[in-house]
Image (cartoon, rainbow, N blue to C red; front, side, top):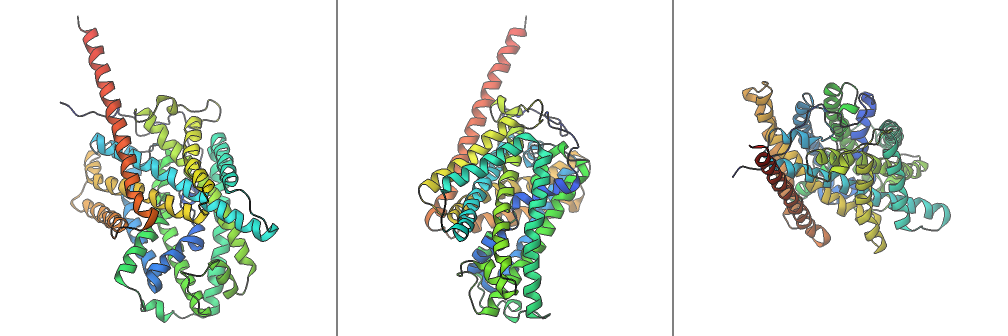
Length: 470
């Protein structure tokens, strides 16, 4: 019995999307916005600090190294292929069909769940600002539907508008945080924090768990690859954007982690347990008003992240539809806008639906951000690991393999495997302990659909062959 196969596609096919419409900066904006970097200092670094303490900066430095290794692998693929399928396209040319389908479904879940996560973050920061300004809070469900609806509309209309908007939003948001960090470092003086330098009070298990959580700050750094030929000169622009996003984000997160812990040392408070952390840092820096601006920046960064995730997920779904992993109707593009319009709507609905349900049941925005962000991490880690493992064979196919070319892929895959184990053991408490089973159930359903579709196509092919024989 032969194994079902996926249809082959040109690695540079445009699938009805516009070619060469995005500049290098706009291409980079896609990756940066999917990471939503403003949310890391505001929401993720305090969580890492609660685990790693004075080793928070080290957790982010190690996470940067791991992501950089993965980025090197992805960039090698991107120099040969430009397709909206992103990592799935790379996997489909080297891995067995069921494993490439695993990458496809994992990546789709990763982008959609990350979108859900930042929608939760959006309604948290929106109500935080609205409460301070008016004394009232608004319906979380309504706010979630609002940010998703606007994101769907923009992604439906024009990818260039989406990229430019994301670029300016993230640039403004990150700039405010950089100002706060510089002010904190300046107020402390130009010497190192001894507690952080000597990792005072840090434990090995705390660092391990903090490192796993720090990796969440980077997920989606490769999403520029989903743009394919929409990027100008994609075989150069996309791999450069992947590496740049890993390096720039890693430097930004590590410095922010160091400065945040330092700032709280200066006021004698605990970063991991204090609410409104960025407001405290703004006061330490001597400019309290910047705390409010960071909340505004986090809010608009969450919006940009929602838009970026829908943009990326829709293009993965478009490619999956072309390969028979999703309904054929999702493989079409808008006649005038040249966007995967149906896929945009479907992925947008898929992103907001769980958030609306959780918000209706009273879940806080930060809980939604944490739960669905952790679920997304499983999808990203599995996709990253499988693509890295497949790289040596991919290089063989393109005649660029050298004996040392497998060192980086195996190091990257090992780092992702360790991150996956760190997510699973020790078993997380509460809702986090159920997430691995949810991911596994989703993956089984996706692979089951793949097997059914493959068998149906095989039967149809054999029947057509029989009819054609005399």
